[in-house]
Image 1 (spheres, protein in one colour):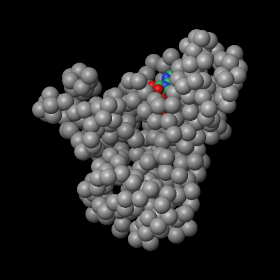
Image 2 (cartoon, protein in one colour):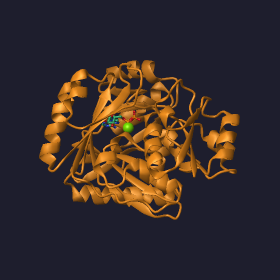
Image 3 (tube, helix red, strand yellow):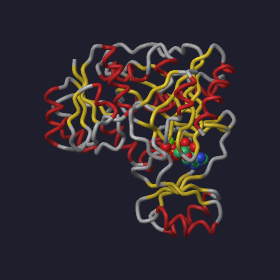
Image 4 (cartoon, protein in one colour):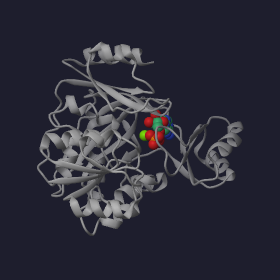
Length: 358
Ligand SMILES: Nc1ncnc2c1ncn2[C@@H]1O[C@H](COP(=O)(O)OP(=O)(O)O)[C@@H](O)[C@H]1O
Ligand SMILES: [Mg+2]
């Protein structure tokens, strides 16, 4: 069995390690020099939508998947008549445009913050009249780690917002004073079997994920989130892992966005679950039985952003995953996962590590 993976970043690398454990070979497409997944299989160093590279992947692999959300949808359509491509291109299309994504949530009766389409400075004014302040203006496409976003707290911020992110398709979204953020990760295989992981509680700083913890003691939220993810998986006839990010307000959940791929907030599943999100993604796209998502104790994950301090390397409080990337400010270079017998002990370890990385 050989799996083609479009993208060879750290998500590709972790998929590659899971594939190795399953005895499955991987081939990647990625334009960058020595990407993280290069040690997991051959990388065709070509653009993601390169017809020749895609055709080669289709001809030599049993199934093709992607680890990178901005793969052009047309790239998948170039090969999806020759080889099964999962997750479906339609799911990727929704995830690539925040407006489409929000309309999908609406269509599926998944609650979400109020939003408006913004194509002009005037649209921001109207959106604020209708939604109130603050709002966050977000680019519809290509945003990640909080990039392409501007928070409008006062009417005086409108000019700066338009100057900073204007000139591209945008949305305005109510700024939510949430209690905390969670994500719910599910997997569905070709036969339609579904497994859902326990909720992960996530902390973002400046739009970038800092820590994740799971499980959390919130059965009402977990039930609700699971229902939403089930609904999405079924509606999209989805195959693979999908992550839904949500804001928690009391007992209510508001959908923020979803990712049609393995997700940073699920990295703890490598050590913290009976089956990791990476293994379950591979199982899903190969149409194998999905593995148990039962937690192995209490897991926590701390992202290593910008650099991996020596103090963190020598701490040995958890398992260090170094993606082997060149350090750059704001870049995700690795993560550490801790596992503990209690939530309190897990939180203590996460706090110690978090302090060492800031
Ligand atoms: N409407 C909102 N209200 C409150 N916080 C928000 C809102 N939108 C985004 N954020 C904060 O910014 C983070 C990143 O925004 P998100 O829309 O998920 O973009 P990205 O695609 O960059 O992850 C969120 O996880 C959350 O912490
Ligand atoms: Mg996000």
